[in-house]
Length: 401
Image (cartoon, rainbow, N blue to C red; front, side, top):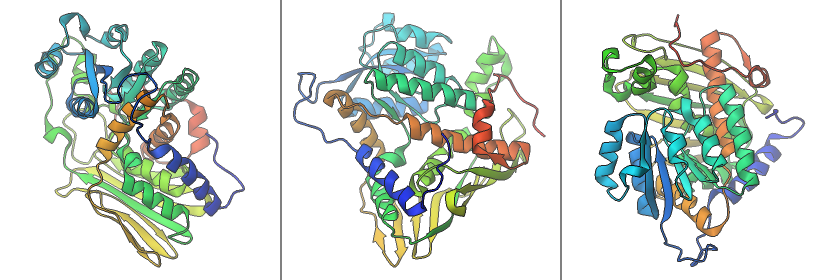
């Protein structure tokens, strides 16, 4: 986790390009090493039956998975999921805060973890402990303590030859992989700076659930999880990790430090997360990236722009990706990063070639925490110092200035 020292940016980026390209995609063989046909369904237990989980379950089952167990805090989520996955018996459905523990006891090849990210580290640990391959959504934690935990569990998964795929779709975009390869080879010349945006409207269109409908404070917070930093990590972590992880990839590593601001300008009706940030990260060799997200806007802009002496890389976030300048390039249409990641996960199980997304997922999560804490504390934050601080957010609401 230490910043890289005494290495040129060109060499730094090129080295990660080789490793990234090698890990990006798996070629599916006609027959798997498990001795069954390559299209045999992979059995998965599914933890966290919300909207994102439903999309992942659909994508994975289309790609060749079979859901054999369901777990969620709320019974209504289980009932809704069973309308689609009718073959899952009552005995394989679990509710409550410990539902993930019970579903892990079922016989299955893998686990899909799609609960609020504040619960991710302990659930990841439980899955690996029971010998299951893991597909989990981003972010992988909401605090430094959780990042430490996931990193350690990732090493256990490697030792057990378990595959770990994290839902950072840009990492599975063929277009992004090609852009990263070209940038690493020098398409932009000397990289100087960058900027990114994730501007969108209010999450869940402002929907909330009243405290009186739930037996405990934590049940209520879990239902409204996005609005609480201890469960979502704030918008910069839960949502903006897509952009910032991709910037890490293109720039060849994580930043050294960050400064920033943010606040609750208008969303004061629930929770303790901010509604906007404006953060600058300093990467090795004096490369600066400014990032501005917000959940208040009437427009949608999820984009990254990396600027160099010979050109500019631009990802518009909606089928627009290109390099302009001395080495122009336009991405080919039709790239489906979601489909790619689902297929890559299942192929890794069938081929006996485990994937290991944990390290870049931890770095991608922690860069968002670095920017968040810079804005919260209104001071320059060093990567190494914050990593050593090992902050752990309690599951409670926090006062917000």
